Length: 156
Image (cartoon, rainbow, N blue to C red; front, side):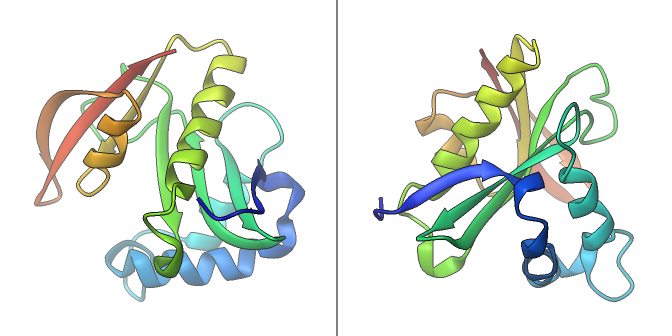
């Protein structure tokens, strides 16, 4: 992992929200891009809450943003009985594979535990290897909006 990486609450870095919104739109254009149902700006503002859910964390490499992730109450339909969810995980492509995603994930786990949760969940089509390497378990597979997703869980 590169030296100088820290993970902090997103609420302490509101100046980074415009950059993070650009990242979200580029990474998830079907959701956040033109014609998409999501609003990167609105979601990131919500992830900037100081307490409760949703809340977000930001990875900084020598003080510059290099990743972000959020902890939120709900994720995909049909799974409302599960909470909280690790979501919106993103690491700048040039910094992927260096442990930054895992640091973000650990920060979300710690936040969920601090908030009194006994489990944490994640739905992902792409982060299965990271989740399994981080001691999460694949609990089910499902299809959401035409994509195959794994539902992962971890006891805290």
